[in-house]
Amino acid sequence: MLFRIALYWLAALLISMHFLRAGNMIFASICVAMPFIFLCRRWYSLVLLQVLAYGAAATWLFTAWHLIEKRQALGQNWALAATILGVVAVLSLLAGLLLNSRVMRERYIK
Image (cartoon, rainbow, N blue to C red; front, top):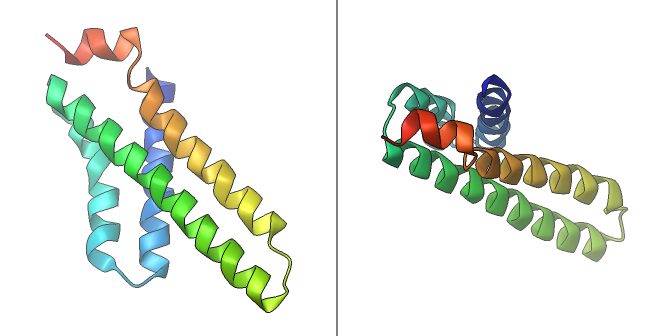
């Protein structure tokens, strides 16, 4: 269970850095604070955390798509950037999916 929570923390920190780079301090702060919802041991906390992880994965894919379009238009190499953003999107998706495990449900759904 510790691995699942640590992976979620990593995904939350990565998406917060994305928003911080864009200059959005409010979303960056929210993303850093979201893993503290693990302290609330209710079923809806797991659902909220999963939705946020899936939203982070969608944000990474959306960003990758825009980056690819921009770099292709400029004639620049886009493969490495797309790969990195794709890996981060998969990490966020995996963080959300692992919260749906039996161990997490036993701890949070009562």
